[in-house]
Amino acid sequence: MIDARLYHSLIPVNPETEPDGETLTKAVLCNNQPYSFQLAYKITDFSADNIDFYIRIESELPISLYYVNCVPMLHTVYSGCKPQVPIGLCPDILIPKQTNPRLKKVANWDNIRTFEDGERIALNAFCDSWQSLWICINENSQIIKEGNYGVKIKLYSLFDVELACTELEAEVLGVKLPRQRLMYTNWFHNDCLADYYGVELFSEKYFTIMEDYVKKAVINGMNMILVPAFTPPLDTPLNGERMTVQLVKAEYRNGSYSFDFSLMKKYIDICKRCGIKYFEHSHFFTQWGARSAPKIIVKTGDKEIKMFGWKTKATGEKYVTFLRRYITELKRFLAAEGLNGKMLFHISDEPGKEHIESYGAAKKEIADLLEGEMCGDAMFDTGVYEAGYCDMPIAMTAFIHRFIGKCENLWAYYIGSNCQNSMSNRLLQVSRERNRMLGVQLYYYKIKGFLQWGYNNYYGQLSQGFYEPYFNPCCGWSGCGSSYMVYPDRTGKALQSVRQKVFGDGLNDIRLLSLLEKLKGRKAANAVIEKHFGKLTFNDGPDTAKMYIDFINDVYINIKNSLD
Figure 1: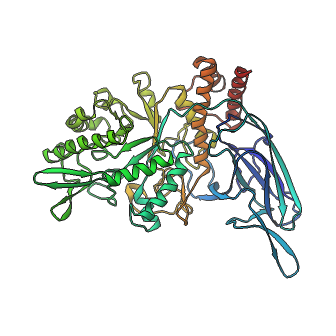
Figure 2: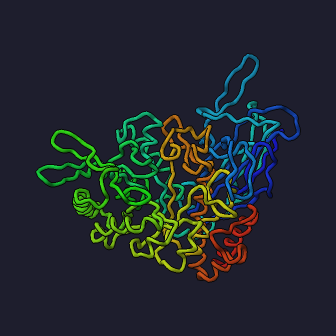
């Protein structure tokens, strides 16, 4: 028989070890909240080597179902990252399954078997490894009627014999999570999608693929997206190039520049349709110093040429003239599209102390045009901010303590190496509770937004090499999973990940704490945090999944007590 158990989403179900944690019998959620949990299964009595089965779910709740596939972690050592986890298989890929699909009878020579019709994934239990299904209640954040619901999960053999049955009680509270106020962007790499699927960039086929990737981002909390007006000057070798990814058509004629925003409008409209609320303009100057212009293609006469690039000085008269004209026209376009105040502008990515002068010089050339706009950059040093060149610093979590208390309009970001001690990160080798913990930290310190550099980046360092994340999740980097959140399915769809779902739960925890704040005050919400984690910093995190589960259960208890 099959041993089937329900576990909290923070308990990893690794193939080689029995899940370490209490089984799950009850869930509590707000009436517009997604809630994920897992069904772990294995043949533990050695009654068979393997058993084919299908699954039926009985519930009045909207249920999404995924098979959890593993990726090979061949490198997990990261200096300062603790605890060090062994190499091996890591459950992360979420392969969608139908919930209660039509069953069909298939005749063999001597028997008739039952299969799920149209399913890509047939389920098998083994005697020598644990596997899991990811089950999500209300994945699309519908409004559910208050009350207690049952979720009964039954496993059947292909001969319709019941093999296992598990049940969860779900309590839906009569209160909604408030809307997400945190702005969250994960850099969207259009060139990677075009490369992976071998399609023409910004063709109709491309936009169909892109739309699915954006939808998967939105249902997990992403509400801002990078808009490549010009090829983003990110992770590019000095004097090197990435694929031209330029939405705005520029033309130089009779001594002046003109711009066609129609392709940008199409891109933005697709993202709006998917649920994106805010947009992020590609950087105006090159990364790590703001010394040059990004690659920009301009039509002159009947030819398109690379008019600006590495050889173009950032503050040179020709580029500044172009840029000022462009920003002026862009603002008119944004106003016509109802996007005033909804576009984040960047000068240059990750300026350090040594870049204060060049960053400041570049910013001064266009500062008057960006007055009143959201304008910020990722940085680990306070130099550019303290010099007055950036009003909205996006601080690296490893060094965000340098900014806290000095800046009211503070964002945060992290990269793969920011996993020392108990820091939050989304790497495969970082525990799920530490992944989710970021939401609590962002709430506690009133952080306005969060940025991460790789939603779907499958290139290696400095965009060299192209990697298949199913087989090499490091993608040429030291941290497994640092450069991507979703896996590219061969059908042109994005496959979500466990890490993405857990991170999304962390964003919803911000909303949950905001609800508690609305009911009992911010002091009460912070008191619950400090009860479980002490005086919180970005270097702190839960030692175990249970520690975080106990915390979130306490938040629900406080909310329920306030509703009575």
